[in-house]
Length: 204
Image (cartoon, rainbow, N blue to C red; front, side):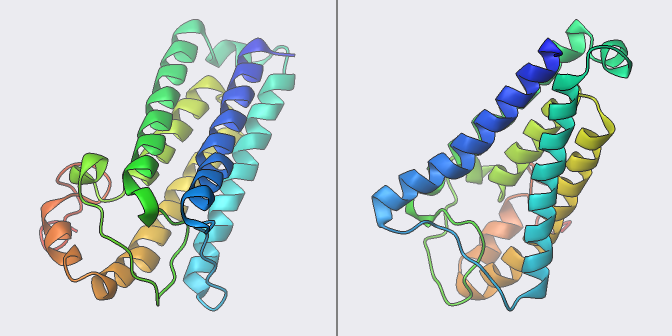
């Protein structure tokens, strides 16, 4: 067993448990609803969902193989500095993801129901980026790739970035344009994933 790989695997599984299973349980206790929205008839939403699942499966497989590795490329790439940086980046991504989920309150959802209307959240992390949950997830995936630099974790990072882009640009933003009258002004003011970049009507 490789200690660095085991650490990466434990952190990965812990993050997935808290961010998804844990958040779902909290939301259900508060609202009586899981927060999951399945769009069986929306092909684009199904594609983005499949990409998210693939990113999780491939990433978990990558850190599992790293945990089982004893020698080889892992030891050359994952030195102490890279490990420390990876843990720090991963932790920052986790904190941003969880804080952003909490800031959404009862408006938190996974997926989109075209007929549903919720409150538009524009404060906290959403005051500097429109999709801070996804930003946090990608940052966490970067940290994981630094902790466990394998081909699979790099592929998982790429899959996650593509999934986020498809979900945000082709599923969520079209819904928000029609569902929330205030979203247009918000999108012109706040960047898509980072401050200022990706503002609708400015550079988006």
